[in-house]
Structure formats: structure tokens, C-alpha cells
Image (tube, rainbow, N blue to C red; front, side, top):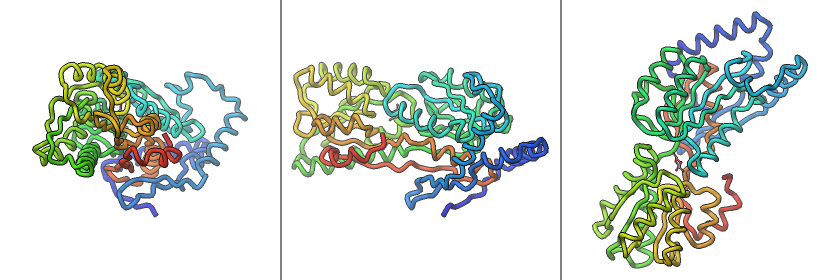
Length: 385
Ligand code: AHR
């Protein structure tokens, strides 16, 4: 069963929401509000602190009722409906997304859009911030101006959000931070749900320790290159720190270079081409996401070298999307450390709980695994992304 925690900084906000609901009851909207909340859905926390959604179907019933009501009143379905003209019976949510740089990012966007539908009781404003923090801060300011009910922020970088978070707090709009971390004081946002990037980096390092041991290469000099993600992103910082923590324990590991590929295929390709010109003897390539790995693999093959479990260069990747599983099956990637993008339903559940005046855990991690190439074929059919 769900655990409920008391989070005092949202009390004022939830009190205001409660008053709004009472007004809505008086104006004849009680049925819509009560059924729209989906208040029987639960976040079930696993022993690892991960969240699983259990839906008893009430949200669907509510959505069906809302849809029927809309049809009866012949409310027009227009593009602009999801901007400033909130109908009042939907929960208005603004999501400031990082961008669309990777397959992972597209899967996360899809997960959010799938969860925050009108059928599920939401008015959803989505902004692709194109990996530009200025654009992202402007998107957040617009959400505050529009007086959305909740803001979801996937921060492009860790620093620089304090002022806009204060603006949201002054406007009594709870902010839910997802995926990446921010350095701002935690009193400035309601909660955070995402990945443990440092742990992901450590997992990659631990896998390499074992792999080299299995091959009897554990005391050999091992030349390692890293293609970093975007500079300043917590995914980059955590994965680098975690991997280097393991590397510190192995004096035979030579960390030759680390350059950013911006989490893109083109970036990975360009950095790898430069590495191949500069370094003759490469034992291990760490790509901080799958897209970079795809670009790097192309560069390796073009240079007449091989990679993967039977190749010259060991390739370690992060994200573990479906295409990367295929690359493991094809023999190009040795291991993939998962970063789970399916955050939409869990974030929706958090919002419902906050709306009901409940308190949620401040920090929640997504469930993630490590997938070596030899398990890829058996695992691929069970993957959701
Ligand atoms: O923040 C998560 C990272 O961002 C993913 O690893 C990467 O693919 C994405 O762009």
C-alpha cells in the first residue's frame, strides 16, 4: 500500500486549491471535479524506493464522463484549447522539456504526453526548450504568467533556476522536477523524480571491472576515452563522477580524454572521429548515451576498426533504448546502463496526490538496470522503449 508523507510547504497551495474546488461545487461543477481527480490511483513504492502506478480505472471512468460532458455541450476541440483558455475542469500542467536531442528524450516526451491527456483530466502545455536554458526559463515564466496549476521542469543544466523557481513559489505553483537534478534549494520545488546518474556511472565502471577480470585483462594497461553528454547536465556530471570513482581504484585504467558529444548521434560521431585521429590504441569507449554510441560506432567502422564483444574497442553506453539493444545483438555495444524515461504516469500520480492535499516523497528514483550484450536478445522482447 501507499505511504503518505506530510509536506508542509504545500499546505498553503493545497488550501487554495481546496477553496477553488468549493467554488466549483457552488457553480454546479462538483461532479466533474470529483470524478476528474482519479483519487483512487496509487503510487506503490518498491523496496528500492521506485514508484509503480496502480490504477483502479477510476481516472478512465472520470475521463469518459468528462468526454461525454464535453460532447453534450459540444465544446469545440481546437489547438488553442490547451493554452490560456483553461476550461476550469482540467488540471493545467506546463512541462518545460529539455529538447529532442536523443531517442531517450523522445521516449520521455511520449510518456509525458501519454499521461497528461485531456482524457486523463489534464490541460497540458508542452515546450521543447531546444537545449537552451534561456528558452527554458522563459517557458517557466510563461507558465507562471498563465497561472498553470503545476509546472514540470526537466532542467537542461543544474544551476541557474533559483529566480524562476522563486517566481513560481510566489505564485503558489508547485514545481515537480524530473529526470535531471538541479542545484537550487529543495524548498523551491515540490519534489524530484528521476535517475540516479552517479549510480549509473558506477554501474558502468563495475561492469568494466568484471569484464576485464573475466578476460584476464585486469592488470593490463587499459586506455579509456569518454564521450560526455551535454556540459552542465546532471546526467553528464553524475555518470562522469560515478565512472571515475571506480576508475580511481584501478591505476591501470588510463582516462585519456573526455569531450562532449551533446547527447547526439552527430556529436558522438564527430568526437569519435577526432579521437580516432588522435589515439592509436583505444581499449574502451564510454558513450554517455545511446545516440552518441550510434554515431561513434559509425566512425569506428569507417576507420576500419571494430567494436563490441568481439571487436577491438569495448563500447559502454547509457540509456538502453530498443535500438541500442539491437546494436548489442548486432555485436556493436558491450553493455548498456539503463536510464528509464517512462516518467509520465508517475509524475501524473504525484500531481494527483499533491492536489488531494497529500504529501509525496521529496526524492524518487526510477527503477533501472544494467544490460550486458549477452542478455540483449532475451531481454529485448520485454522492453517498453
Ligand atoms: O537526462 C537524461 C539524458 O538526456 C539521457 O541519457 C540522454 O539520452 C538525454 O538526452
